[in-house]
Amino acid sequence: MWRRLFNLAAALSLLLCVAVCVLWARSYGLTDQIVWNRADGVRSIGSYGGRVVLALNESTRARISAYGYGFHHSRDKSSPVNFSVVRVSVDRGSTYSDWEGGGFKWYMYRPLANNYLIVRAVAPHWFFVTATAILPLIWSALKLRARVRDVRCERLGLCRTCGYDLRGTPEGGRCPECGCVSRGAPKPPHNPPLERTAAAV
Ligand SMILES: [Zn+2]
Image (cartoon, rainbow, N blue to C red; front, top):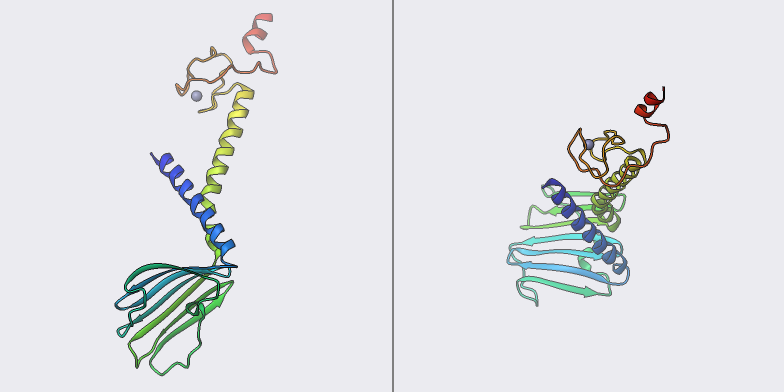
């Protein structure tokens, strides 16, 4: 059950990773943006110039855009105004925060006088590629480790599940230790088996 869930999560994560890579490559020539127009303002997520930008413009006096309310996707060659972070003179009592580092940006402004809120969160595409690549990489590493263990067990004539020495067990029989069916004939050992040595003595 958990293994299936993990496989599914790793596959989905890999798909997302590929999608982000495509968006990343596109972002240098095209701007992709999904805009959500609501009565209380506009929310959008966009991909532009190697960055993903989350924008929130909240206002009680929001104007209805040409698209009306709801979601729409836009594609543009020019950089959208939404992506720029404008420095403002902050009035006393207004809430303002601003941070930037390593390709990440955060900007939030809520003036005291007017009832609106502007938020911008910017993160580079490489961050999302790295985040979505973690699960597929762990999956690959586990598969590789299992394969290496299988090859080693086959070479040494050991049970692939518990590592029990199967050299004395008939081919295709069950492992006396864990009950799993041994796959394939174990290779002849480098040293003569104990019983043969004992018989020779
Ligand atoms: Zn076993």
